[in-house]
Amino acid sequence: MDNPLSEIKKHLPFNAAFSLTEIVPITPEAISQLSTEEKSELELCKSLKRKCEFVTSRITLKEIAGRIGIGSDFEILKDELGQPFGKTDGKKFFVSIAHTDHFVFCGLALEYPFGVDLEPVDRTVSAKLKQRITHSKETSILKEISIIRLWTIKEAYIKLRGQGLRMNMNEVQINRESDRIFAEINNDKRAKICSFKLKNNWLAVAYYH
Image (cartoon, rainbow, N blue to C red; front, side, top):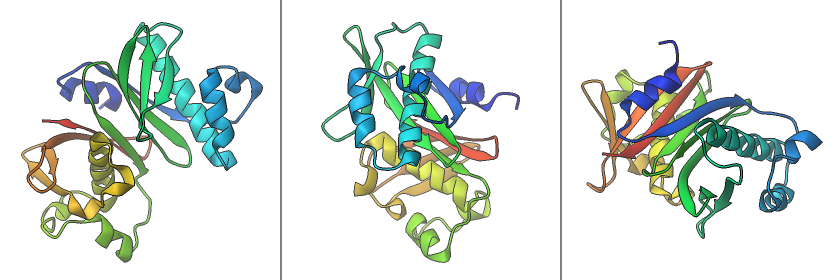
């Protein structure tokens, strides 16, 4: 697979663009690419690590927007629940962001909500954390999918729902049907997840199916 990001797009029933970017340091040039509101939000970030993640994600999303022909006034805002979204020329765009210590994974779409996540392939998961991740009916799927890959799949689904810390991963049940992976909770809306490996990371994109 030469380009997993292009491969993901082939599996989606809607137009979207993605980028996996190495986290950049805080520099005057980087900050100059932020809007006034984004600069104010940057000041609220409490750690240098969080500041770098914030700046990288905003720059990356603007680069994605430019790549697909969105105007230069494109900016990233947050709704009342703290979920990011893009806006330009009166249009609202769906946005999802994930990061590790070294990378930021971002996606942008106009017509369809989605969620993304990213974790290093070699991240260690303790027994206690594994219990917090896995559903009681996922014994068989864990024979096919690593716990880290499962983590990204569930986190992408939770971001799709916009519930963040308000939902536990072990409430979400993952099923694999042929080469497709699905997630659901309490027979609620079902989501399909695209899952790929890139630069020693597992990437996941979830959307309603």
